[in-house]
Image (tube, rainbow, N blue to C red; front, side):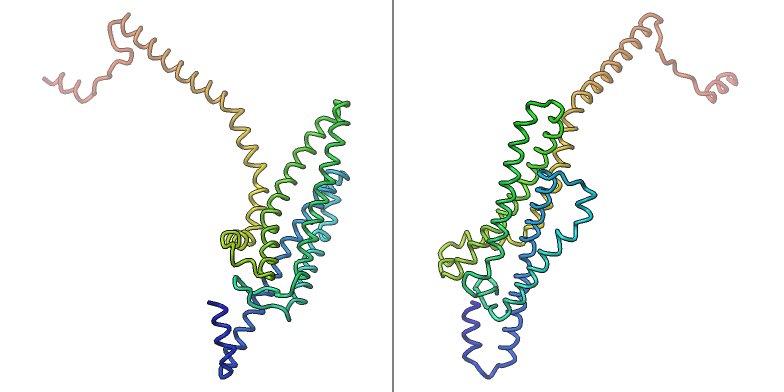
Length: 268
């Protein structure tokens, strides 16, 4: 439908304003979609953060002083490529994006490569430290923390792959003309791109959820025993009350007569 609309506008030169508006919105959409690739580059910064934390042992204070370098390069790269692609933004059937062949996706390819190399470096480092810590019991606690951080880094990288690898494949399929035959994959790739922030949020709250679940499992026996103890005390109290009633032949809690009824009896 978009292509048919474009052909009809191109053939009608009597609608210059409509043509200008169409081209302007096409450029704007392509520009902001390209700006969205900043999220891809920010995930490389997250990988670098875990590399500095696990392999090089940077503390939070040192990382906090360098935090500008985790945001500045990805934002600058994304903005530069968004402006460079303005002459090439065109309709790609699903959306308007950079229609040039191959080079527009080079930053995304490099981001995937860098993230993969960084995670492999972290994995090798964790493996080496695990063998060393096995010989020294004092280092086991630190190694357990490194493994936990490494697992969290793997989850962030998995969210990165789930989002950007299908997007990259889809962009090349558009340029080669093979995307028209795999509708399901195109639908998935187009739907997953805006969800990068959502996946990062899910990975971010994952440790808190696991800690709450672990605490719930640890306290479950205590809560069960407390419930059993309250039930036992209630049954013991009922048994004692029944015993008192049986021995004394009256109710353990006698009913106090109403004062008004006593006065009426005296009057009679």
